[in-house]
Length: 128
Length: 391
Image 1: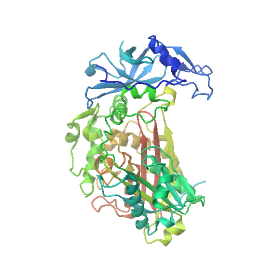
Image 2: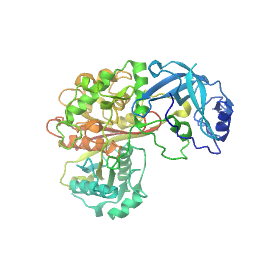
Image 3: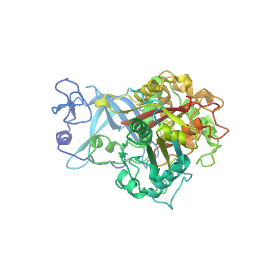
Image 4: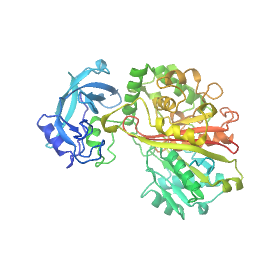
């Protein structure tokens, strides 16, 4: 039960490595090497240090729902959510492959990809 | 340095239109400007500082300065969504106190209703180059579901209920019945709100603000000019502003930027919470009000649900009369930006010019708070405290 159609993410020089990996079924998480902290959303400049040295490392692709909402007024209802990754950052996503009435804060979820085009597959989350 | 009392609000105007198919956007800006200047007893030729935000057409301040024939020595087009105009009041006060501006004009206008915009329920890409866009836009963030996620988390963490949120709408509607220009004038009950259609869980249709055309304007002047005008003096006492964002992924949707914009406003003004007789609180959704009231310190974090219940926000009944014009929830939300109208009703209250049925007695000190962007991602927050001449 995903959205009827997805807005395709614009891929730019800063995010190409992230999106290329999605085409291989890999979920990368940005990490600030100086602080060791993971961050979101992908970018090269660390919001913790201001340095252009953020690296993208492969994540576990698992996390916990922080909050969510089911949009009832679109042609097809969909569930937007923030998921707190096991690496730490909380990220925006959709929860899919689930009965929306069973979605709860605290639910364990894992990444799955929706192929969009030649450039990108979209990371979504489903019950783990 | 405190700028308490070093600038005054001399003129205000709210456009009576709620649907303006027969007017252009620039025309609406100019009409509200003319209205506020007339209210102050000033004219376009007196204005030397101009403030507008992203709703202004063309090149914003440049286009509107030309259209209205302004001769400026100061321009500020700070854009923080619906909070812009409250931030503009802060910035204008700072510039007036610094001697850089004598007469500041702030305008807002928009016609989303005439333009048929699906404001709240359709995802929009504002800018392909926005750094967040690829990691948010594909997931269908809309205005409503982003605020809904904040409400969902607040409920989970603090036990807040839909019935408690509904009290905010009940209070707004109780006030709106006296506003002849309000879009929604029927008084509603808690049951009406929770039984209205679900838009995005847990927010119902009546948890959401209206979509309207219209606009408003504010004229601010130095105190010497304010005293020479034939209007009640409304003093700027203090303000604060901030940007709250997702903080590298360290997300907490249970609080707003008011946590940081409120304290400097109280400190600069020397005002205590119990001195605030009236508060205009940004009300894009009921949850916006609830979190903001907590973050401004009117109650403890997590206690907002209890605080807003049982009519505590209704003028003449509750401890904190709010949005006595009906607010964004019932009156209007021009250009999908409610910061301007928040300031306007606070000024009416301090002047004693609110509708008699909702006017707070001896309203010597009032607060106005603006929220912009999204409580679910990145937001501008601004707080001002204003008062009567002897406040």
